[in-house]
Image (cartoon, rainbow, N blue to C red; front, side, top):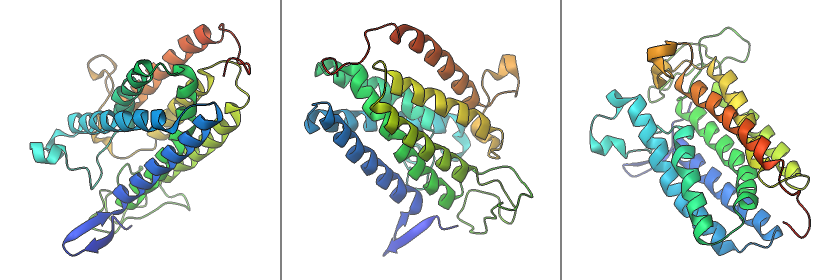
Length: 263
């Protein structure tokens, strides 16, 4: 594929990083637009996004380094994300709490704002997955399906010359579909937090399935000492996410329904 989009002198602009930035801007724009519809200011939304992004990158990169210590042996390698090396669940682990702290300090309606962000996040995530495709990371297992892809660029992370499942595109398409579902749900939700929980649930289920076709086995396994290699780390997190969704849905659905006076 095309890991490098273009060069400025000796400095390379990686396609992965460029599309990640595009995805981030799409999330920002869509979140601000939706937040204004429920009476929230742009300043508050930008503040949430800033701190969530900072801690999200730390968590995302940190989890990747823990999974792939041999690929980032020095502190300089830990922070070099231009060529890829981010784990989405790591971003959630630190990014979501950071966002909630900002909302709490600003006395913003936490669940209503969380729904706004949840409806926008899969759009940016889907665009970044296309960046993964160009970088050749997060690649699939060998296959003979007609739509298999073959990576021949020496800079790509995927093995060269082998037909592989385009798992990056599978996930991107799934995330775009989830975005559409959640955008519709925003105007029809029965309780605050419903969109957030739906997002977490749909993504967890789709990620669990797509993981079965992933070929980059260096990601590690979930609770390997007990479960062996039956679940990848991301599948284990997906199972935990579904448990959280089930508990959250039970609790939040019993609250007062959404009304015009309770935006």
